[in-house]
Amino acid sequence: MKLTFPFVYPYTVKRSPRARYVRFIVSPDGLIVVVPQKFCVGRDLLPLLEKRKDWIAKTLEKMAVPTQFRQSTLGIPDVVELRAIDERWVVEFAPLTRDRLSARNGILTLTSDFNKEEAIAALKRWIHLKGREHLPPMLDEIARRHRFAYAKVVIKEQKSRWGSCSAKGNVNLNSHLLFLPSHLTRHILLHELCHLKELNHSQAFYELLYHLDPNAQDYDAELKNAWCFVPGWAL
Image (cartoon, one colour):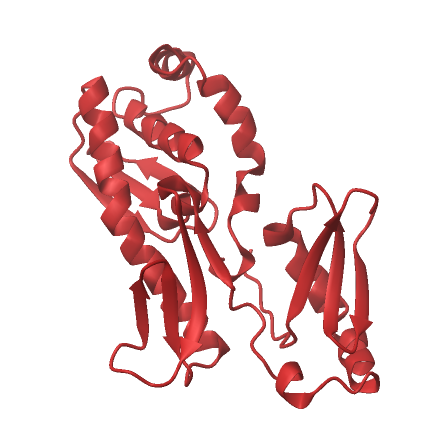
């Protein structure tokens, strides 16, 4: 599903063990969104914000929230968590430099002339490059360990699939795999490699997968909610 999201107000998310539903609180400090403990922010919050955007805008105006706050860029993250490779990057803005996006010492620096769309597009390109850097070696390591031979690997930005494997032995991997916990990312890579021998999801396929990884069934259950690890801006 493609989301169009022109909402331009920043917000702070607070999880509450007592909350039973999502609440929007507008104060002079801005918009606070209170969500239940298990609420999937990456998947479910943006549609709710879009639905309430007119009320939020009017309420912020009444609260006389500073203009520079109201015009700042919602959707640009403060932190990028790449759980699959155990990396955490803080996002900052800086004056114009030669490199409009630089990554050093755990800090992602964007130049201050970026607008919202440009900044998110730059972050997505960076995620794609990180996927090309890290996912093929991970796949190769697992393939060597279990003696699989694939033809090539391609990194993509898929919206509904974590990966795929063709009859020619080509493996496609979603760069969003970097957002998942390492054990789930590796489980998906092994899953795709097993398709080199069993192209469908037959009993023989799952027998092979569960033989190679005794925890695979538990990981399959975890994957039902795995898209919650992918932040909304990346989708």
